[in-house]
Amino acid sequence: MTAPVEPTASGTRRLHPVIAIDGPAGAGKSTLASHLARRFGFLNLETGAMYRALALKALEGTTALDDESSLMRLAETTHIVLESRPNESNRVLLDGADVTARIREKDVAEAASQVSVHPRVRAWMVERQRAMGARGGVVMEGRDIGTHVFPDAEVKIFLDAADAVRGERRFLQDAAAGKAPTQEAVLAAVRDRDARDRNRAASPLQPAPDAVHLDSSSMTLEEVCARAEALVQEKISAGT
Ligand code: DC
Image 1 (tube, rainbow, N blue to C red):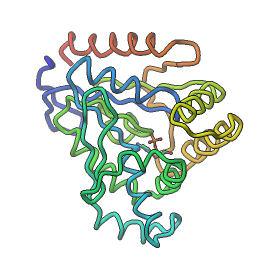
Image 2 (image 1 turned 30 degrees about the vertical axis):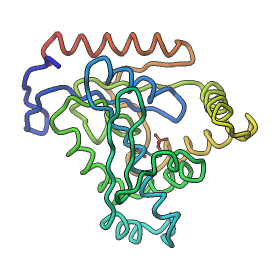
Image 3 (image 1 turned 30 degrees about the horizontal axis):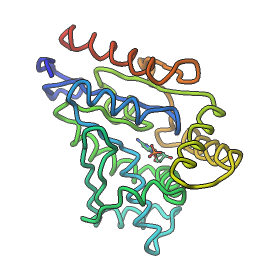
Image 4 (image 1 turned 60 degrees about the vertical axis):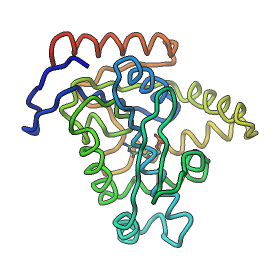
């Protein structure tokens, strides 16, 4: 990591760049984030896993997903840890328990999207995400990283793909994991979640004005990774 110390928009200094990757489910963000993290030796932080972990805790207890005050009380007694691992998704600890696999289940994905509409829940998450990325040297993936969490990120990528392509990718991932939903059901779930993520009032999924748009329906993921790698390298070489 070679970037110099730079003052950020928030007036603090960080040693290394923040790479923000936003986009809808199934666009390939995780593949891209882990590629960049490996390539540049940065931490890879999947912010969606934090929403998933809180949602899981709500599902396992009695907290309703539409009750913001109760979700906030729950959040205040919750400890979520994202462990960045080379070549793998984050290990996720919820109050010390390893929930890495459980939070990938469909019920948790759906619940996470519901939990994430609440502004106070988002503020709680954003505060923690900013603390995790404050020193830079991170690839942070989510829906609002370039718009809210790190509006001063050195590199912002908005990775998108056509619904049908994203639905098919999720279907193939589920099939490889031994699950057997129909392709139509997977596509419908992807569309539902997207609609909620894009249309919520609090920091909806949208590209930051200065984000570079990449569309993985018209590029292979290898091409996406190469293009993004070049963007990051350019910033590092320019010393920003
Ligand atoms: O990226 P993911 O599929 O693990 O995210 C799960 C849900 O969490 C997603 O439906 C929207 C929400 N989310 C969010 O609102 N903001 C983020 N930065 C990350 C995820």
